[in-house]
Image (cartoon, rainbow, N blue to C red):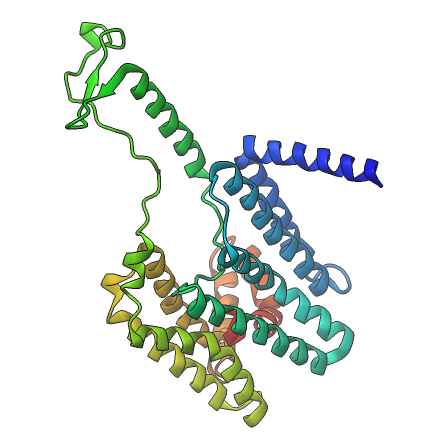
Length: 340
């Protein structure tokens, strides 16, 4: 048993080193796995379950590699809030596969039971983040993917800082940087401009105090509404039926009220918070693909548009025909209100 654990530890360390040294190649592998899920869809039996499994694995692989890269570049360990956001992200990436597998195994009743359980867990975890850890405007997913391109920029920044420290020194009282004699370049290569310090971090973020200043009553209520919206939608579907307009209208109203509350204080939000609010605003477009609006108004128009594009515009049939074929399946699988 000890030998197996040692081999596993060595294998993980080798993989960790490879991901840290080759973040872009790791990203290519992740993209390849994700494209496999698109290729599998509709081509073999039980393809929906297998496709969702592969897609979930690709997202979880991205999260796993991102944690490796983050831990190698950031020496500050995450607290309980960060760990809770990681588990929430795991649920976000896995919930569609779990629901599809539950429907395959136990039918529609099993699917909705699993959906309710997952939404209760997510709602409780997000409310815990909101009130106990002051995590407002929770992102979707809670742990966003790491921007791999910034890693090389960070390495260059550190190299520039090291070169700057080796060729200059700072005055004690003013902090101004002065070139050292031995570090001065030849005369024909000098630009004669004063040295500028390199910032400690490549990414600037507001401190927690400035973020807490945003926490007004209306924004907290807006976030609570957005968090409990999936449960409100599920209850409305149970109360009025899946074909009723009331669940659709209730969810849309909650989204609009939440966004209007955030618009009043958008100038005080951080960059990440503003991006999340903008994403939620753009997600309103998905309501045209959600039942019962889709069946009543969108389906025939979208299908006619895709058919016309494939018949009249050269080369678009390669994309439009499969999209028209799989759109009903995707609409039934993905376009739930709680997935936005």
